[in-house]
Length: 79
Image (cartoon, rainbow, N blue to C red; front, side, top):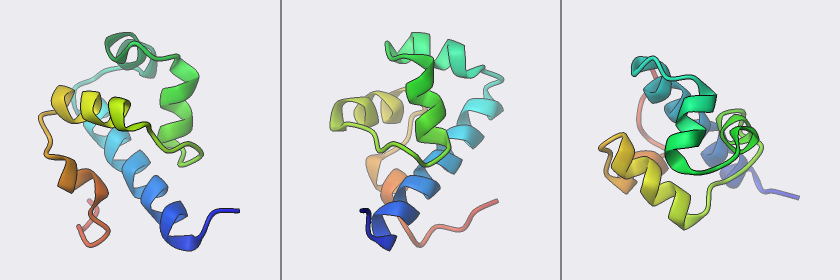
C-alpha cells in the first residue's frame, strides 16, 4: 500500500500534468506520442494512479519547461 504522502504527490503531479497539457491544447494521445509512452501511461499519471519514472519525469519537465522541484512540491497552491 502507498502512504498518504506518496498518494498526495501522485495526485498533485497528475493535476499539474493535466493542467499543463490542457493549456497547450494537447490530447493525452498527442502528449503520449511526444513522450514516447503509451496513452494509458499518461492517463494513469494524470489520474494519480501511477507515478512516473525518473526518465519520464525528466522528459515531462523538459517538454513543459518546468524545473523538477515544481513537480514535486507539496506546498504549491493549485489553481
